[in-house]
Amino acid sequence: MTHATTTGAGEWRFDGLRALYVNCTLKRSPERSHTEGLIDVSRSIMERHGVAVTQLRAVDHDIATGVWPDMTGPVAFRPTATSARSGRPAAASTSRTPSTAEPGRGRACRTPGRDCRPS
Image (cartoon, rainbow, N blue to C red; front, top):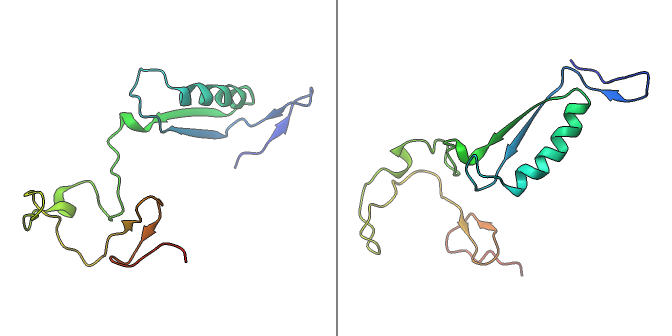
């Protein structure tokens, strides 16, 4: 366990502590992002106090997104039928009911067809 200590000048030290910044910019490396500029300011303060800092730019990695247990493979979207609207393969049926976002509200409504607007 890392403990904070002070130097003779009263400055706090956090030697042995590690921090990870996850930069969620949409710009790929090495393009400069405004988010990286903000991280750099905070990072310099932390490093000055002995914190070992690492930065990860999410857009540079293959990170699966979504609400299903495993979004890394074709299992969640296995073609089982063709959608009447688009002619593309439809998503595989599962026991879970996916959330449907309420238009214009950014809220999830867990029951399809239900009016999720506040009364």
